[in-house]
Image (cartoon, rainbow, N blue to C red; front, side, top):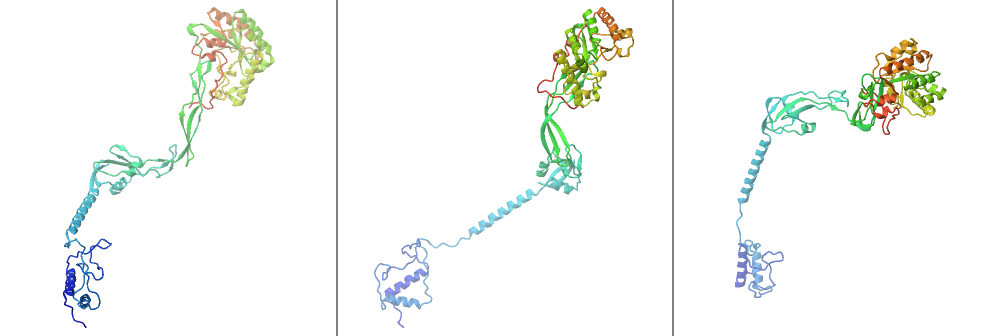
Length: 486
């Protein structure tokens, strides 16, 4: 084995390497990664730039061989150029610990604040509860037992017990909705009241429908009953319960009801007027009546039957030609309240048509047989008639009580606006023919004027003019009711 090379070159290279191993500064070029580390130089070029000897017998080769056998002399990577060796710092760990302590302290404080107890008033008594407690928690903590409400129909009938809301609550004087109850959280100073649960109304469906008018009667008594207001449709919502099937109506647009006014005629300005009327004609007595009336310059109204008009059309026309009035006494003198709607309306339409055909006159006023025309009969009339005329004084001639009795019945207690009942057909009317001149003379002497029904109604300004014309019809767009006002 060759001995150690002690040449200056070999010794200098070794010392330089030892210097690296002890943290000496290497000023070599930067490598491609930017680190200023020791690198191999061009072969045979020492630090100073002078080429070294190469070959197996060179001093460099001996130095390298010597280093390979010196286990204590290890080559250590060189620190980056320009960076001085700094001792390790231990202050960062203390900072982290301090921050963690502050965070933990803050979190603990927040937890304690959130879970603090607050004082509330529960049903008038002071009570401590956890901040943010729900009403359900407070009820459970206090052992309260409010009674649950029921499931009820849209009309308020109980469907199932205990299926309404669990309880009701009021906070600081205000009632809470179910949504507010669910979202409530207690805070200091709240005043809470808990009571039994509210009922829950079943689910339902709603549709919009027409709201029909109803029939209303106005006034207690009167010889004249007339339509003072025609009906119009309104709107309503009809709600149907999904569980019960019950229905409920809510009017959204009020309908206009039909109003029938009962009235005794009162001529304006104190006029002394009376209306003389004859039923059941025309008959073989009609012409006699017309002659007597003409002698006293008096007018009368004949409530004729449709069947009689068709039998004596010329006599019916003679009444109109004489300046008197023809109106309906229905077609066949039936008891009207006993008829169904279709039969009742036929009684009117047949007679009105017969009057039009025979006399050329339109009319919608009538006298009901026996004076019977109830509220229910008005409903069934379908709006075909405008006024029902009965009487204030009844001659009771149908009893054949004698001429003087008939005269007395027609004149005693008479007042202005009265309507007097006599008969043309329906039996022997000889007593009426004899009594009529005496009736006319008596009342004429008292200052009364005999007028038709249309004229009598027109004398009273409280009666609408279309009704007073005797030919009022239901206006376009109006409807007739099928129910009475309750």
